[in-house]
Structures are given as C-alpha cells and as structure tokens.
Amino acid sequence: MANANTDPRVTPSLEPGATPTAEPGWRRARLAPSLAEVHRSVDVHGATWFRKLLAFAGPGYLVAVGYMDPGNWATDLAGGSRFGYALLSVILLSNLMAVLLQGLASKLGIVTGRDLAQACRDHYSPPVAFALWVLCEIAIAACDLAEVIGTAIALNLLFDIPLPWGIAITAVDVLIVLYLQNKGFRLLEALVIALIAVVGGCFLFELFISRPDMGAVARGFVPTTQIFTNPEMLYIAIGILGATVMPHNLYLHSSIVQTRKYEETAEGKREAVRFAFIDSTIALSFALFINAAILIVAAATFHTTGNTEVAEIQDAYKLLTPLLGVGGASAVFAIALLASGQNSTLTGTLAGQIVMEGFLNLRLRPWLRRLITRAIAIVPAAVVAVLYGESGTATLLIFSQVILSLQLSFAVFPLVRFTSDREKMGEFVNSFGLRIAAYLVAGVIAALNFWLLVQTVRGWMA
Image (cartoon, rainbow, N blue to C red):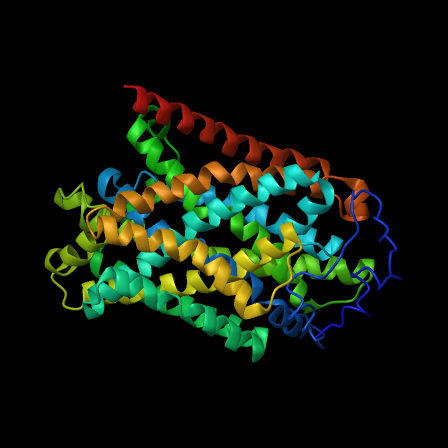
C-alpha cells in the first residue's frame, strides 16, 4: 500500500502553518489520496499484454454492478411487460453512454490523481462543492433505496424474511467490505465478479426457457419515435437511463482505478487509461447482456401473454414458473436478484465513502465512515419498507431511478468539463471529437431530465 508521505500524487507534508500549493488548473492542492487504505495497492506489472490486462481488470466490474442493480430490474420489468421489446434500444443507448462516461471517469482519476469528488472540491468554490455533495448524497440514497429493497425482497421471496428484517440484514455489507479490503482489494473484486457470474448464469437459464422471438428482439434494438411520442414509454425510458448511467458510479470509477500501481509517467498513465477503458468496456458488456435479458424475459413471458401490468418484482417471481411451465424458474430469478442486490450494496458503500471523503475531506475511521454512509441509505429504505411494505416497492424502485437520472447532469457536466480542460489534463485532454460526443451525451441527459421535470410538475398541477 502506498505511503501518503512518499506517493508523488499526494501533496508532501508541510511545515506547520504552511499552505499547500495548488497545481495549474486547480483552485486547491491535493490533500490526500482517494481511498487511502487501498491506494496503489495492486501491482500491475506483467510480462505479457494479457497478464497486464488481467492485472488491470477488476474496477470495471465493481462499476458494472451499478448498471445491473435491482433498480434496473424494476424499470426493465416494467418496460418489457408493458411495451414488449421496444425499449431494448434505450438499454443499448444507455450502455453506450455509460462506456463513454466511465472511460472519462477512469481517465480523470488516473491522470490527475483525483477522484471526481476531489476534483469538484478542488475546482469549485466551497458553496458549490457543498451543494454538489448534497446532490450526490441524495443520488446515493436513491440508489441504495433500490439496492436495499431489492435485496430485502429477494430474502423475502426465498426465505420468507419480512422486508424490515431483510433491510437490517443488508447492513452487514459494511462488515464484509471492511473485512475484504483488509484482506486485499483483489479479494473484494473477486467476490463481485463471482456474484456477477451468478446473475449472468441465472438469466441465461431464464432466456433459454422463455424462448423469445429473436426477430422481435433484434428489431427492439432499433430506436423508434414512439419512445418520444408516448409519455408513459418515455417515463420508463428515462427511468432506464437513470438506472443505467448512475452518478455515483462516476465517482466510484475515478477512485478505484487508482488502486492500481502504474508508473507515474506519461507512458505509464497512457497504458493505465487504455487498460482501464478495456476493463470497463468488457464489464459493461456483461451489464448490457443482463439488463437486456431482464427486459427480454419480461417481454417474452408477460407482454406476449397479456400480463402487461407486471412491474413489481414480487409479481414477476410469482408468475414466472406458472407461465413458463418450468419448475425453479421463479427461484432462479430470486437468486439472481439476491446476488445483484448484495453486489450493489457492496459497491454503493464504497461510493458513499469516496463521496464523503472527496467532497468534505472528512477523515474518519473506516468502520465509522462506512457506518455513516450506510445509515444515510438504510434509514430511508427502512422507513419505506415499514410504511409501504410490498405494495409500493415497484413504484418506489422506478421513482428512485428517475431521481438518479435527475441528479446525473450534476456529475456528468463537471466530469466532461474537467477532462476537456488542457490545463488539468495536459496531453490527455479530450480530443475535439470526444469532447463533442461527451457534451452531446451530457446535453441529451439534461434535456430528457428537463422534460421529465416539466411532465412531473404538470402532473402535480393537473
């Protein structure tokens, strides 16, 4: 593990009363490495290209977890059961946006030595940085609401554990993350990859037994104007966007790529950026498969049989086995949900730590820091479970994803701005074409969010 006093990324120790000097392009100097306990702790030297690829592999899968969490399940189930395969194009477009934005996030972390939260703190005035922190915490709470409720639902379906107790059980992930990080960051990555494999295997089984119309599936990946002309479809589409491209994942990725001990030279950073992009692209391809599989299974099983109102995970669980006529279909669905929810709570806890440390420069003991960030999410989830029980979980899950979508621009625009700033990025600054593509993605996200806000206000006033 890197020592903060010798790591060239960290401002060296100063004499009492001295002020750290800000680097060119930044308002404030770097104060500490991101995730100090695992910073630059993974060696990436390898004799061959493939060995180096394996050494860099890992952070992308932790990020991909956020793209296949229970919030995605809710929006994908609703989209597939109500509109068939039509919203597959939205899942594909969202995934392409995610590949671009996550690539920028990893580049920011590798090149500047700052995660996105630290970069916002060091660039913006304190009031602006504080406001961005509050918005990010709201997004994390909304994300964890989906993850915690999803895990609790899975425990309820598999073991008949009441929802409030299931939510309490999810708090154990704080201890799991602490234990695994003490044993090495690679062990945490290995657990996450194993759980992703469980989810993928479960949905391969579900796809096989649901026998979707492959021609209709292929046509579903082609965008149609109906998505924009049908308000209900557009609402679900924006929910899918919010569930796929998550603001906290940008903060997370810009931090955990710094666990790799690459060379602090232009060539070393260039190699790290390249391998980080390959890692996240491969990992996000798995996320694309799982999200598409959920929607395809919902379309093939529910939409084609006239069950177009299936949006709750519990209803999908109850109907899968009877409609497909295959024993165990519902149980496999719930196992995948449990693996997905637990995976997401693990990475969500890390993201909460990164955001709190980065924006506030708040240094606490790891267990206390994680307990605080976890409580921010678990308390609202517990209140929701007690007040609404099972009946309102689908609506709440979808609504949480829309909240995420509304918060997304406040992470995307700073990210694109920082990586397009030559003074900050040097030779790694975004090319003109990449800059246009990034701002186009940011603009599309902002426009969709504005439309959603207008529709929501109209609904309240009606």
